Image 1 (spheres, helix red, strand yellow):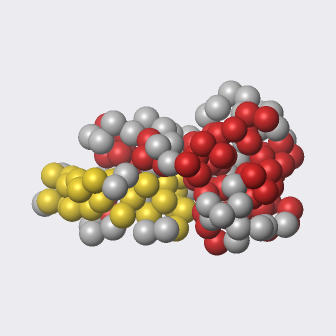
Image 2 (cartoon, helix red, strand yellow; image 1 turned 90 degrees about the horizontal axis):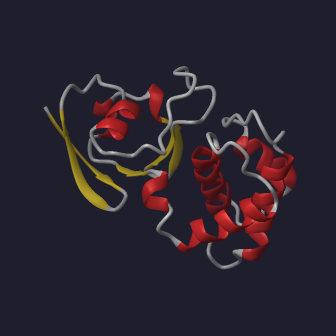
Image 3 (cartoon, one colour; image 1 turned 180 degrees about the horizontal axis):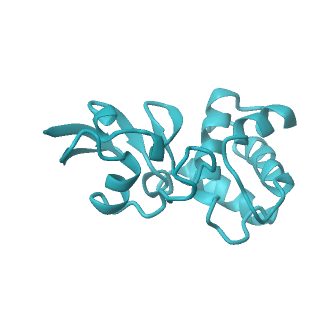
Amino acid sequence: MSIPFTLNGKPAAYEGSATDRLVDILRKDFKCPGVKVGCNEGECGACSIIMDGVLINACMVAAGRAYDTEIITIEGFRETEKFAVLDRCFAETGAVQCGFCTPGMILAAECILTKNPNPNEAEIRDGLSGNMCRCTGYNAIVHAVALAAKEGKGLW
C-alpha cells in the first residue's frame, strides 16, 4: 500500500504496511533520527512530531494515519527562523542538557507559541506536559519558551 504525505514540506510516500508505527518509518525509512524512541507508550514525548498542526506522539500512530497529512519533524523545523529563536533561547537559559528530549520540547514549544504567541507560565507548563525531561527539571525549558515568545515577537 502506498501512503502519500508531506514530510517537512516535501512530498513523500511510504510503501509498506499501514499498521507499521509512524515513529519507526520516520526514523528508518525517512532518516529522521530526531524522532526518538523513548517509552513506546506515548508518555515521554521523545517521538513528538507535528501532524497537520497538532503535536502528536509518533510511537502511538500507525503509518496509515499519515495518509494525506502534513508532517513536520525536528529535521524540517530546524530550517526555520522560528527554530533559530527557540534554539538560541534554549541555549541561553540552559534548557538543554543531555539533549534526548530537546527535539520534542522544541516542537512542543512551536505548537504552544503558534496557538498563543504570548503564553503565561501555566500555559507553557501545560503545553509541555506531554514531554518528559530527566535532566533540567523543566524550569529552564519553561523560561526558554517564555524568552522565545518575547524575542520572537511577530514570528508566531
